[in-house]
Length: 371
Ligand code: SF4
Ligand code: ZN
Image 1 (cartoon, rainbow, N blue to C red):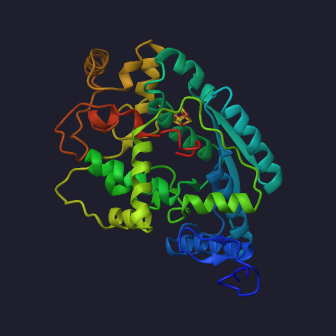
Image 2: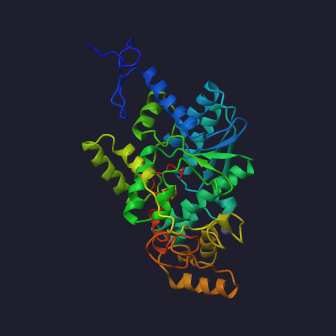
């Protein structure tokens, strides 16, 4: 005999929630999923009435479910928000052009305004052109740094008060593990924050902080949401992929592993004596930075001069040359090692050399364009 839904007791259960193990009918699952996100929004006081919120939309499952859920909750609970879809076109033929078609359909389906900003118009480079110059080794470092800034710039252009992204509980747990393994205290301290960037121009919020990826997939599947599921063609087999596999293994013996890791990350305290990078403004683009010249500008300089290694890797002779040029212009700042134990190094944006040079720093192809 079919099992009844554990919540309403009327309809037949058709799924087992990965997060709680409850057997539920579709409608009760939708309600539980949406109301848990509402609870997270209220607990963290993510929004205030009247705010304009830019939803980072890539057409992938996370951001599509985010746009759908934000719209549902905004109407159901009278958040009083003006919602806007904001997409970044990295210029990846055969990937982003297709996923942006999905976002354009989402715009119609959810009746939300859509703005697309592109790397080409902001930086004069597409990812296709960048990969042509640098190859497939550090492409995600460029892409992640540029995307972060592009989202901020787009949102500022739209007069948004906040940005929301579709980062989910699995993404955050992976980031905690990666930062522990790297000993990156500065990032470890902030990677579990539900809102970041409050010291910068625009706060960024993660309403899916406690939402399991499996449940996002289930929600999108049962609701028949229109999303794009192909992986980026430049996606490397990155460190994040190993962190992900490790957590999946842990989940087999401890189903609450994802939430446990997030809670552990939240509970970690950083000693007051550990120095963190201080925020300033880039002297070139005026974007927030931990150094006089931001990472995006260093990378752009490298690309434009045909010296792409300027923005990546360990201290390289190209970088040293540029540091000398900047020092001669009185523009180089020496930054303490960003709170890690790797000592004092000169870097472009306050990261340590070890972290700045790691291509998996920003995204591993599982970002769906939201990181
Ligand atoms: Fe950019 Fe993500 Fe593709 Fe890397 S995997 S190139 S960060 S879209
Ligand atoms: Zn800059």
